[in-house]
Image (tube, rainbow, N blue to C red; front, side):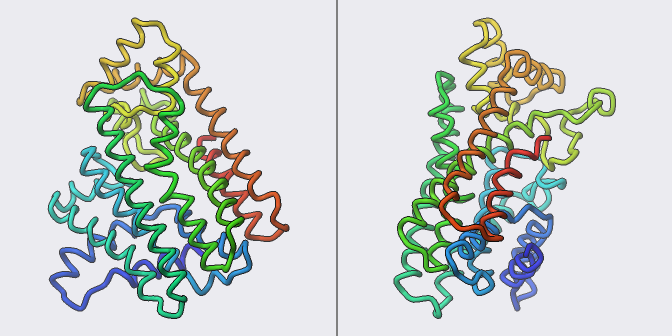
Length: 338
């Protein structure tokens, strides 16, 4: 399925104008061709199959979510001045900020255009899909704004509810809930299916994002000996190890640490997280503190619990390959750290 999704994505990113191809579409294609798990299109197609639809008819619409993801990553990398993405320099470092921004805008526009062009889908369903995509987009940028605001205003008095709200807005809808719900609509499912996919998708997203945050802090074996710079250790991850420390992100591990560590340790962690240029030693020290006070283990336990909870929303569906694959994806979301 992944290769069919890849082929479809690339057909969406071509132009008859060689100038536009070079300075826009080729940049988008290069980013897409870096790879990725493609689990967002897979969620859309699997939920379609789960409710009795034919996913082969909707490969193009499933690609909506990979296009949106690529737009979000390119823009996020610019906002965070991320150095690496999927094992290569971030797009704005390769092509410059103006071309990278413009390419992100193209991917966003393409994401919305797919469903509009499918005249064989009844108008009511197309409108519902576009409504879901519009709400998804607003929630995603609201989550991004809230996270940026926390960093700019040095807000640290946060709890798990605050963290999950950011994940819900910034990740949960576009990475899981809306792909699943669009698949339900394409497959002819009803309100109970939409509700089940919301429950599965949000808990899947919580487990996935917590694990993603953990992966950013798990140092490759012997990293201290193999490289003087943590940012050079990209084993199995594709972006800087410890990048979330440099960006001062309020991950679940940081939220837990700030609730449970002694005052002097919390203040030192704030000093590290509020800097914009950290030494490798500072990054390693921050990671060690999160390990010492149980914040990493706490996050691992929470991620696993969310994956297990996600699977409960599938229990009323009869056994099928789609159901089994969705269950496997929920497990994969949190097992990547092992």
